[in-house]
Image (tube, rainbow, N blue to C red; front, side, top):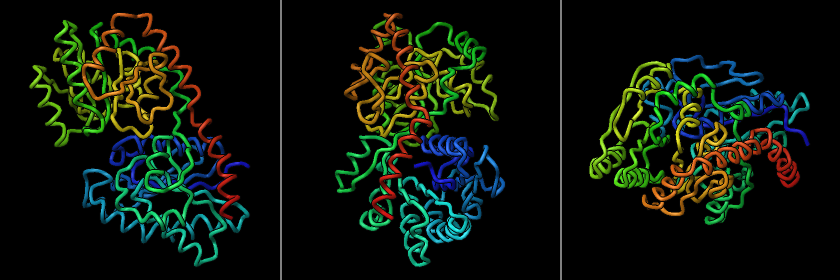
Length: 419
């Protein structure tokens, strides 16, 4: 069975800076591009920048539709600002649009549509879409899936209604088991990475980044300030390294929030100072220049990092700390190894991670465990080189082409049992 010609992706996050909050934005923009590259006419409906065009061509065969802009204009912080009002707006307005403007015309042309909704904010939309389609006699014209990327907001979901309306999917076995704990069966359709990442970092930018880091042992951590991300383990591990005479530094990229105060407070307690790099705009060279001038053990980058700069940072650093305590998939770690870096993962959703083969894997939240493995890495260039080579090979098996092939086969099952 081939993929349907028409695809609809529903997610609050997307490619705009306004909607780029976490890993979901990376997932949906890359998934949309992958669908488009495979020849599918793809519509990504998301909570986009209120000042941008409502409809915009994004990539070959991919159209962006920025939803709820009239609400976002009064909530300028990000896509989740004014979340309650936006969720209500989506439940009321997205289902009729999808049916009238996409599903019905496709059905009239003899084409089937796939609608893939992401995260708890779209669960009610999926339920409403199923109900409205049945009322209009269109339910057999499309496949409806709802995907679990995390457990956030699960207390807000009407699970019996969702199970009756959609095929539930998950991004990893870890998420599948989380769903099973509440009695929800699911199909695993993993994340992927853009095949462009397999080429590694831009050589010139990578060389500039290495020059800026000046051979100093360097760790990188990118993600939300959240207890699940094991930030305190990273701080404690850095302190342990310093106590043992290793002058390592940690480069942090995350938006500051209340939990950031807890993280930097721990750094202060452990005798670690923090410097910040910030600027307006999108010039990654300014970050590289700033890193060359900093000397503190912790550098908090609050500026935007484009893909080229981030990829060069992953490849140039000694390790990328994707050491979450609860990680649904571990996209940052996968992107790090694709770039030629070494990922430090937790022990939940990172199915691609093989301990000390293609990544470092921590089984606890103890900073001493992480510090022990980092000391071994710093002392053995050969081990690091072997892990980088193995990581690059692993990343090649996790492209979106592989993920779409898995989705295509599972669609055959879903349609067989629901049509």
